[in-house]
Amino acid sequence: MALFISDGVTYLVSALALGRIREERQAPPETFTFRDYFLSLGSGFAILVRDRVMWPVTSSIAHFNLSTTAIQSIYVTHALRTGSMTPAEVGIAGAVGGIIGLLSMPLAPWVWDKFRPVRALMATFMLPALAGLGMLVLTPGQVVSNVLLLGLSLGFWASCVMVIITGTETLKQLLIPLEALGRFSSASRVLTWGIDPIAAALAGVLALFLPTGAVLAAASSGVVISAC
Image 1 (tube, rainbow, N blue to C red):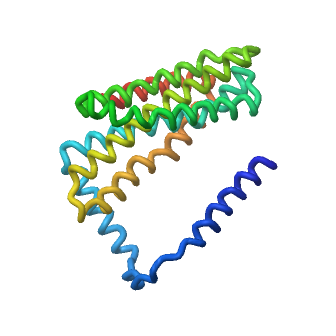
Image 2: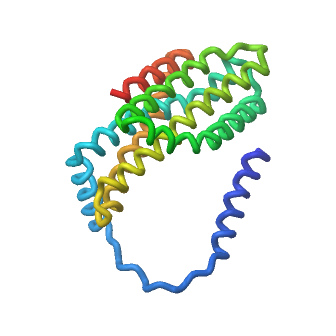
């Protein structure tokens, strides 16, 4: 409970800190109705579906998110139950993974300069499956190896995601006209982020009938398929 409360306080402090920013007063925004919202979103989807590069890329991201969100929904339970890890050990592993993900950021420009975009995307969509499979090797009683294995799995996953985001956002800005960028981004976010609650619910239902390891294995296979 104390951890949740302290985490909530950090959000409050961040919000108050933003409130201290002073900027010139701008003209009040135009009225934006629900009808305007749906028309703009529909226009964004039309642009998305017609684009011969960003449509398959965005579809792959949605499929990737479907599989990786399923892993995210299950891996903590799997680590606690099957790996007999403590919450502290899972937290330390998460911190290790986050640090690895941040340190991998300089790798992204090199990847996109070195390889064709389609090959870079295929590899980074597919490789996070190794992270999901690595979680299956967690062994009760192996504290140090479990923390390292889970941390490396999360870090490798985060590194791939960093490369994916860097490349796909660059592609979007290069291929989509500036005046349509907002509508396109809204549509792509509805598709790629809207899949997350569906994936979490699906993983939760599967975990009622299957071992968490089986759910992780199925989700990892889905990560590989997203490269197609």
